Image 1 (cartoon, rainbow, N blue to C red):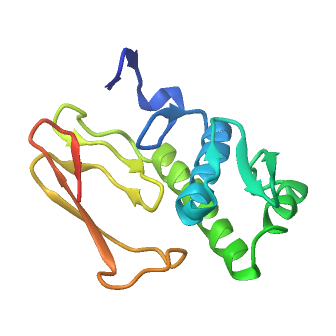
Image 2: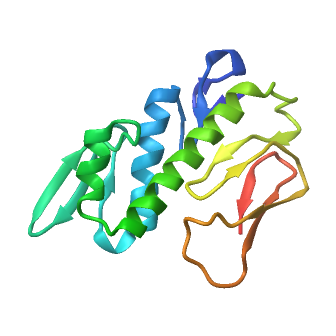
Length: 162
C-alpha cells in the first residue's frame, strides 16, 4: 500500500489513522490526543504526535495523552467532569481496539479496497471500492439523530467522508 511516498504493508505492524500510519504505541498516544480534541473541541486543545496542549485557567497543560498511564490519565481527567473523563477514556480504548483489529487481520488486495482506518470516531473496516460502509455512532459521542454514519468508498479505493 502506498501512503504519500511511504510504502506500508501489514508486516510493518503499523496502525492507520485518517492522517497517517503509526507504530501501535505512537498510534495510541496520537489517537488519544485526537479523541480529546474531537470530543472537547471548544477547549481548543491541540494534539501533536506525542503531546496534547490543553488551554486551562489561563495556562496551557502540556501532557502525553497516554490513557494507560495512571498519572497522565489523572492529569487530564482532573480538568474534566467524571462523564467527560469516561467519554475520553472510552474513545481512547476504542482507538486502541481498532489498532489491535487492524494488526490482527490480514490485508486484502489493496488495489481494490478502501483500507481500514480509525477516523477519530470509529473503526472502519476494509471495504470494496464503490461500496458504502455503515458504522453505529459510539456511545462516547453526545449526539442526536442520526445514530449511524456512513462512508462511500470511491472506485479508486479512497474513502469519501459523509
